Amino acid sequence: MNLKLPDKLLVLMKISGKTTVYGVIGDPIEHTLSPLMHASAIEKMGIDAVYVPFHVRPDELEHAIKGIKALGVGGLNVTVPHKTRVMDYLDNLTDEAKAVGAVNTVINHDGVLTGDNTDVYGFTRCLFVDGGLERFPKRVYVIGAGGAARGVVYACAKSDEVSEVVVINRTLSKAEKLAEELSAVTGSHISAMPAIEETFSGMLSDAELLINTTSVGMYPQVEHSPVPYPEVFHEGQVVCDIIYNPSETRLLRDAASHGAKVVGGLAMLAYQGARSLSLWTGMEAPAEVMLDVLKQEFGQ
Image 1 (cartoon, rainbow, N blue to C red):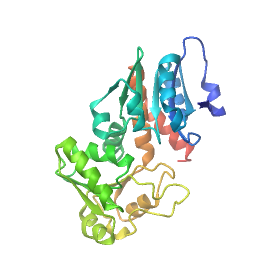
Image 2 (tube, one colour):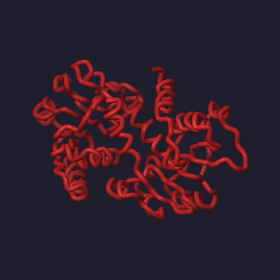
Image 3 (cartoon, rainbow, N blue to C red):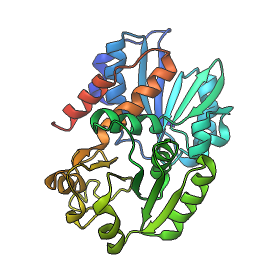
Image 4 (spheres, rainbow, N blue to C red):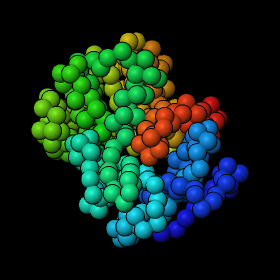
């Protein structure tokens, strides 16, 4: 388990024997923006804490989680590829973590480790705050059926306003499996469709809300889009892409050029991070500070 701390964070740190340690584990971990935004929030909150990234390989995961208790680490964020396997080594899971089948936040309370999933909160908040939604539409379309899709589909399906969630994926069987699993959990109608031209042209032209949960369009493949038919976008539509690098993907550019309201992944990243920090500290974390520092990092 290797500790890597960006030089730019050192000026924010005043470490003593009373300093609480929070962090993030993943493999790889060098790309993470979590230390940057959490350090800024911790400074704003005026608490005695630091946030650091830990490189944890899959074969070290169990040892790393045991180390949280031994070292008194206050809490951890969990990123790929550990979000599912980490559940095996925790004492408790929240209802949302169980439903989604993934943990991105671990809270250490007197040696008892609880796994939560703040992606659901972060996604919902970015839609309503940055996307301007006042309610979920009756039908929601989600592109992708991987791990990132689970929290998004769950957040939409558990809303009383949503009558159907449509999961669109290149491998239809994966979409069908996700739809079946989360339908059982939420009691909502979740269907699956293949990511082909007929699906996009026949369904998305009437969609009020579309969310991309795939990596298509992520740096460095920035000219790719999961929806290669820009004509399906229209005014009155909200299009969300959970990718945050680049902050404006090809999907969002195409949607905006046709009058749709667009929401990028930076907002979701900030809101889910703020929720984690609030769970650890019992204090309201400044999400706006975290979002501002992310925007600065991307030159917005």
